[in-house]
Image 1 (cartoon, one colour):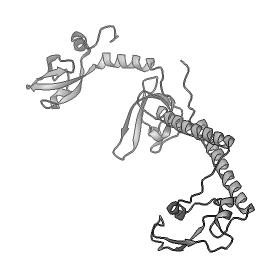
Image 2 (spheres, helix red, strand yellow):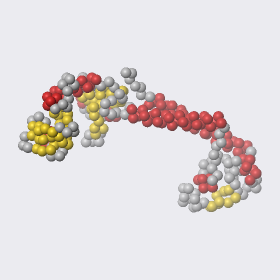
Image 3 (cartoon, one colour):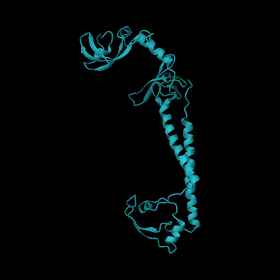
Image 4 (cartoon, one colour):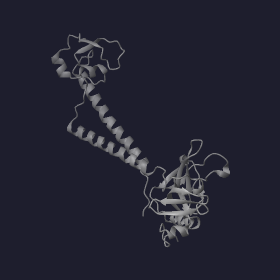
Length: 283
């Protein structure tokens, strides 16, 4: 299976380009309409609105307390304003008066703008998908790209690759990962110092290591403790199997309380006997 490619950076560059093109098209429309307004002699006092602000408390961001009057310019009349239209501007008073400038695009301009807007939305969605895909998570293959702090002997060398088997936050609030390399060695780099290189890797190497470890150390089973004696506990598995298990075979049970649900490492021979794992899968 071909390794997936991280397209995050190329998508971000495409997004910048698209947004610049959209902004340029919108800016050009404002400039064109402003120039047309000036060319026909639009009123510079009211910008073609026919009114001016005569009083405002300035206490309101929306301008809802403002008072208005007719534009005092003699040349500013309905006929002249009909010819000039509104000069492009953005004003809280226009929002109150319903005289906001709105661009009117040609068919070609509207098509270009719609295409840009649609693609921008698509790229935003693709970026989010890529960020999720390439975010450090259990089961993904990662590489150490930056050397951490602390004693040099304890730092994970740059270039180490491994499967992320766990993410955790230490007592100082630092998020760290446990990387398991193909030799079975564990590393604990800061999550900020790694990058995912394959979000869906072939994990057969690590699965084989896990099978060997489970064969040697036991098989994990989630159980609920029903009763305890001095040397053993009556447990019930999630599949409904009940059995007595000595503390010597599962030390986790010794400290657990009745009705607790915990994970225990069941001896492999017992896990095979109870049917939790077959002999073929444990080899």
